[in-house]
Amino acid sequence: MVRLFQFALVPALSLAATAFLLSPIPVDAHAAPAAAAPIVRIENFTFAQPVMTVKRGTTVTWVNGDDIPHTVTAKNLAFKSKVLDTGDRFSFTFAKAGQFDYFCSLHPHMAGKIVVKA
Amino acid sequence: MPADEPDERRRGFLRCMAWAGTGALFTASGGLTNSIRLDGALAATLPRQSFTFLQLSDSHIGFNKAPNADARATLREAVAKVKALSVKPDFIIHTGDVSQLSKDEEFDDADQIIREAGLPVFFVPGEHDMLDPDGGKAFRTRFGKATHGSGWYSFDHRGVHFIGLVNVADLKPGGMGNLGAEQLRWLKVDLAHRSSSTPIVVFAHIPLWTVYREWGWGTDDGGEALRLLARFGSVTVLNGHIHQIVQKVEGHIAFHTARSTAFPQPAPGTASSPGPMKVPPEKLRELLGITSASFVRGAERIALIDSTLSA
Image 1: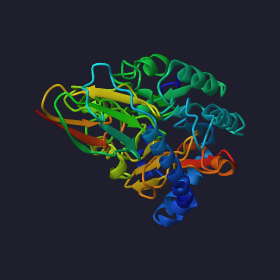
Image 2: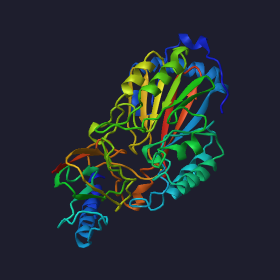
Image 3: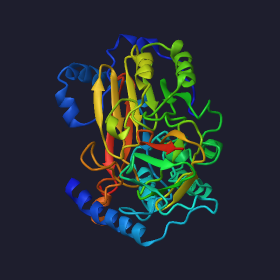
Image 4: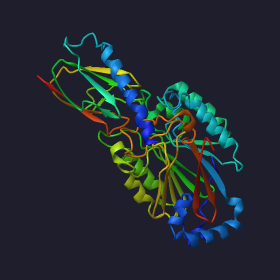
């Protein structure tokens, strides 16, 4: 049973990852003109880049690659996504320097951190 | 609502036992034998007071990905099984994740399908039922009228006290399920004047005990609720959330989680995540199911029988 599951999961994930590399990532109109908009992928009930360091003004985008919905919720409530179903995205522009801890409000053991440098 | 009934203190002399109805558990607990024989004899004299109720869980209406493209269809099959039972249950409890995304049409369809059973239904929300902008109001409007706080309540049925708890509201970063101080205060008051011989059934979405911390399968302050229940002779805790059967008996408390009607999840730690198990179509119904609970007056125990949609 376990083996079956893992078998099926691997192609599903690599498909998702491929789709992502091929498609340009839309960002908000007011996003900083960064060369590469940073992405935090949500997969396997984890934030795949659990700690990310960015410059002030950067827009970070989260993409849910799981079959189960998740949210991106700042511990200090500086940002909170709507529920993200499979393939849904959420972006936030970090205008202030500091450390932003966040989690999934549905599965609170999922945690991540954005460090914003001035 | 089931009728209220005063406690029957004459049952106090009985040694109260909660058990989960599998042969494995039964034979593993040698100490149960005498009490079951005694209970069986008493039950024979009081058959008219026995009753059954049914647990549905994790119907995830709106889920449409592998391994189940139509969670509505499998919920309909589960309800058909309920309707076909030879002993009609007095009511159904649904232990949450009624919907996938808390959408109105998901709640409406679930409601319509479950009502087909023609039985009273008591719901508690899962985390998937809290996704509307008001954090669970849509669920409570339909399924949780006259409940407290985020949707908890209790009721009595034929001398058994049923308590529906909510451990999916206001979850804390890094934590698991959470009941919160207000609900625990309410529970303390709710239990305060009840005789320890009152059989108790507690139902909530996420397991009240820690099944697997790494996947958040537990309730951070569940231990506080269990302490309040410790003096009762027969406590049965029914949960969902993990889409598989896990059970244990600890003292007078029997813990049991039900199968989903939508999709299975892997056993703790056996996969890279707790996401849906992508089983082949012909295997799916062997891993989905319902739980039937039988209460026999005098036996002070609740027998739980899980059956799959394929059976």
